[in-house]
Every structure is written in C-alpha cells, then in structure tokens.
Length: 243
Ligand code: SF4
Image (cartoon, rainbow, N blue to C red; front, top):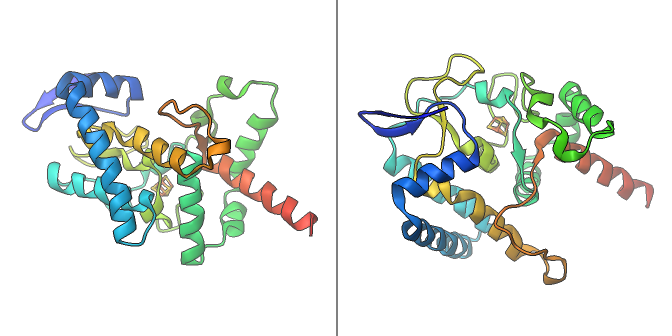
C-alpha cells in the first residue's frame, strides 16, 4: 500500500494500518494541528453530548460524519454495498457498549444476531479455544469473507448509527469497490479521522470508574464483533444461572 496522488490530493489506496496512517497524517498536518484537533473534537463531543442529551460517543460520531460531509468529495459507498462488512470488524469495549445500547433502543435481539452468525462466531470460538496467545491469532483472517453479524439479508447495517470506528474509516472516495479486496477503500485522510481512535479511547477512559482505570495509553484493546457477542452471551448465561 502506498501513498498516491490525483486531483483530489494524496491518498492511500486500500486499507492500511494505523501506523502508516499516522505517519502520513503527521507528514501532512504536523503535530500541533493534530493535538489541537484532538483536544477540540474531544471537548466538542462532550459538550454536544450534554446539549443534545446523548452520549459523548454518539455526539462524536456526528462530528465525524460532519467532517466527511464538509471536507471530502462525496463517498462512493452506498446502501447495499457491503464488501467491507465481510472483512472482520473490531471494536473497543466502549464502542461495544454503545452498540448494545443502540440495539436495545431499536429492539434488535442480540440472541437472534448470534443465532444467524453461528458460522463466524464458531470460527472465533475455535480461535479462542486454541493454544495460541491472543496476539498470535490473525483475528481478521478468522472471519474473512463471512458477513458481519449486524449485516441483514439486504446488505444493510442494522446498527448503522452506532457502528464502530473500524467501519467508519474504511471508505471509498474513488469509485465503488467491486469485490472484498476493497480496491477503492482507503483508511483515513482527514485529520479528524487520524485522531478518532484516541478520542474514543479517552471517552472510554473518562467513563471508567477511577478505581478501574488503567494507565491511559491512548489506545484500548479491540475485539472482533463476533468476540463481543460471545462475551455478551456468556455474561447473560452467568446472570441467568445466578438468579
Ligand atoms: S457494523 Fe455495520 S457497517 Fe460495520 S461491518 Fe457490521 S454491518 Fe458493516
């Protein structure tokens, strides 16, 4: 994956890792601009959350959407295009809690979601039960080509408003993708995107009771959505058996 240029400016074709993205952003915007954007967006997310009586995370998703609308050419991603929903999507605990909250509000039954995603959830269970250490497992490969548990039969995301950052940053500005190779997808171009992960982590940190806070490093552990569903299912089983 390499930096390229066209009439829209520089871009990274194909998905890229966070370090590659960060070096590009630092090269393009400089540390001071990145820090200012980070602090500004963080405060705005909290303030908007209070004003609109919503969670800071939802307010932040709104700010990110706004940045896409104002600063980018229109996205080529459309309803029903779901190639990137077959690649394995990960979320932090905070994002997962937002998804569970949103699902509850919409009346989405997570048990049904689990039921229809048995195949990919089974793959994750197998990986979890293997002798390998967590960081040795290629999580994305484990569910590659399987539909995301939150993708419906019409290829629509049923938790769209609460989808995690992993989904939000894989976008196509130059033609639509025609396969799961995501030829035209790219990850992060705007400065808002480059600071999105630390903002989500900081919001999670602030929400965690002081006693439980670990040293804040700017990132939070990620799990595949299938993995979070397994955690959710196990927690529910325990709750039921303790009644
Ligand atoms: S959460 Fe929604 S947008 Fe993200 S991969 Fe799943 S279906 Fe696609």
